[in-house]
Image (tube, rainbow over all chains, first blue to last red; front, side, top):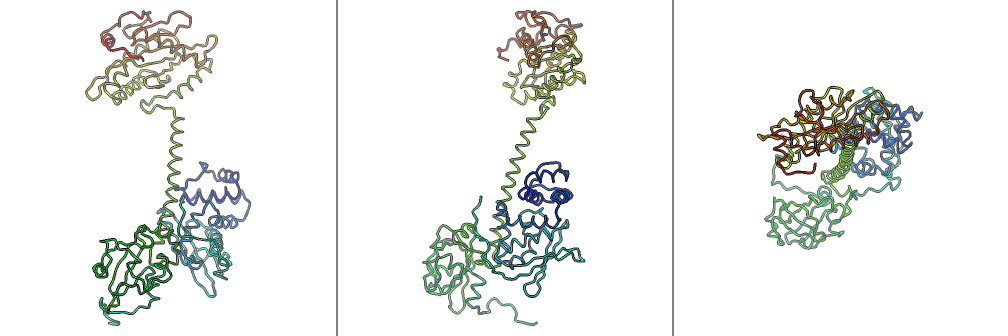
Length: 196
Length: 377
């Protein structure tokens, strides 16, 4: 698993629950180092061990941790660059949903080794959408749901999201009911960027 | 075959709205050089809601392939890559392509941001909706931003790795040139040996003679070859359980375990000096050095010295050996008597002999060396 993803998991646990929890998770997962490095690769088993340890340490439902992780990726002020990169996908939330299928290519454009989930979008009637996703490890649906809910907010769209189970093909589903595409102003996105 | 055969001459009709959608940065200019219509993004960039009726050359400035300000000159540029700028924003170079419309309806100039895309987007306040979905400018912006972020991460990684490397070096126990232990490892080993009352040993402070001369006259590579050779000598001459280290530029230390007899230590020192004196060939040049050795002994009797005391004793003996003419060893006496000094010239059972500093060097090699200008070792 790419270090960027492991680093995100570590960042989420540290920012949300404190460095003590991360230290506990790290110990329980048997990590041979203190910090993940964003620009290195790690075995998938390490990532899974960390997620498992986090669920045990936090004594919470696995979906809750993963969903919070997804939300954090979009809303944490430290991750503003990531939110901006996501907003490049489209001018509206609907555009953004349609561009989800390009997410993997978009990621690889920057980091060729980055393995992002494969995503398919199905459009139903009356503002209903179903996002189907598959990744190297299971549990991507709750992460995506947290992320999509935060992106709907970001665009100012009013939407109801729910987990749609796992299909026969093994793809995990998130169901979206878009109620109002322009419900609020949302957060601003200026194409021009004040670099750091 | 269904449909019309392809033809580049067939005239098709496009509404102004269609033009705006396909080419939001176009300018349609009539044959008199007045703007008929401009795409919404271009109008935004020019700072005017409506450019219709304005002279083209009041709005844009053609720069490449050559500065042009006439319609006849413009017509020559059809099919070429055009460099231009807006009169309202001369610092942002843009790129264009030109096509002639049929029936004297003028020309269409389509414009893109070219390489100034990042500055242009900021300067004109453009949004995602200002670009045609076919325009890759937004993807360029995305890449530009993403690359900046990942490069920052790479720089952080490099910096952390450099710090880690420096720390590892600081904690290293080996001298990379000779493969011997370094001072840190030797000090730790001496401290361990001193802490063990059953552990008697001799300590040799070895300092190369005439080394600076090699370094100065033949260069650092020759000096390194000599140092490597000394490392090899120490590894070869000492027993497996003994320990040799390079503790400074041309300074070495050897810890000789379970050996406190002055005669035995003297024999070892004499052997080391003789081996170090063997010439080293470097790029066809013969490099010759010698060594002075100061020896101190630690036995279980009475108080064991501190590391500092022991080093000082060995240093004092080394100084005595140097003063006695170099290329020889001296044993630090436990009593305040003068140190015992010897050299490899003393063969056989090698009783350490006392030498006066004024004695002539015992063999030709050292005599010859003595002719060299003195240096402060």
